Image 1 (tube, helix red, strand yellow):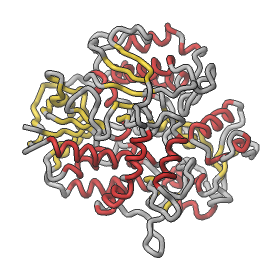
Image 2 (image 1 turned 135 degrees about the vertical axis):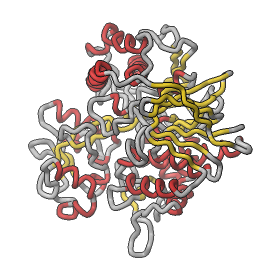
Image 3 (image 1 turned 120 degrees about the vertical axis):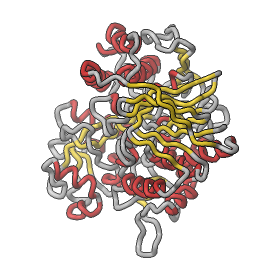
Length: 528
């Protein structure tokens, strides 16, 4: 009998489950609902061309420009066209989007958008309030079974088709049998030492999908948010782009606006441009700061309560002082290759939605606030597609599969080392001439992947790092979030990176001739 398992408790997973109702499904989440999901921390909101003077075509073009030639235009147009319907869904689920005195939705402007089109909640609380509303709706939906504290370890594949997943709940190992598995595991920011992502976002879904035979696309493209609070916290708190949309400026320690000479849109340039500008100012010893004093001033606590609270907790009053900032790994544009209905290419029964998926809508550099939009648009499409295939579905079968080993302190130390390596060598600016890119150092990463019996968090993190490094090494150009100091210009023809496991479960040293790792650059899908 058909059965449905959703792995992940963020916006993408919960929205998919709610849109599946009344079909039964099981949602696995490694922590309590509402925790450990990047979507709960999203501050800006959801981009939707529903305001006066705005248009779907304008939203499409802004997305394509930000994506630097790597967007699938057909998928972008599909996503943008369905935005208004998904906003209505969220309103029905009880999301308290901001409204003006006439009852119209308030929309803010963010970098690289040509219009005010970001639907928000209390300035910077969109992610939190959206998640609260969806969790409440989910708790009242009897068809959805939620198992909290269960972390998926690997996917089950039988006869070339998805058959479920193995998960760990405390010291127990559980086997879930399902004919449809939806990966909604989020991003991979925790591969880097400085990130805005929660500790659960370390690329687990990418590793599971790759091992199951799915194709991974563009893993080298990581978006670094230019304005994370530089206050020594892990994860680093985010200072939403909406602050700059309201007129906040980026300055160095001398009070000079360094973005003016780097891009005509200055602080509202695409994120990759701003991130490199902030990074360069810090590297030059001039520091980087967000100055909100004139543009926002005393309205800060009311307009941006989340950012204000983070600043105050660090001893900074943003009403009277500039805010120290630094770029931080924020969003992964790469992911599991899927079609317009979220079905993973090459693995029947497997679906991916949200940040773990590669739909082609973000290209080389995600446009601000398109991430939550992608999650709800494709979450609905995944649900609709599965509902059309699953006649008389049952809930996923759960079986006890034994006990699990305890945490490994040695692995924890190696994870910290891996995160530092990735920050130094696959950060905002990369270079094939850097010492970290030499074969002997890269071999250390692949050595972790190859270690006999290594299938836990360290092994999966090393595998994803291995894929990112291999792809970045072989993309000898600069485009969007991937900037090579030794290859600063874009290639004449935009291409996607494709990576696939060809039968050997654990890949060897990164190179084009690696056993078990098929790698190629190919054209963006025809018709896009």
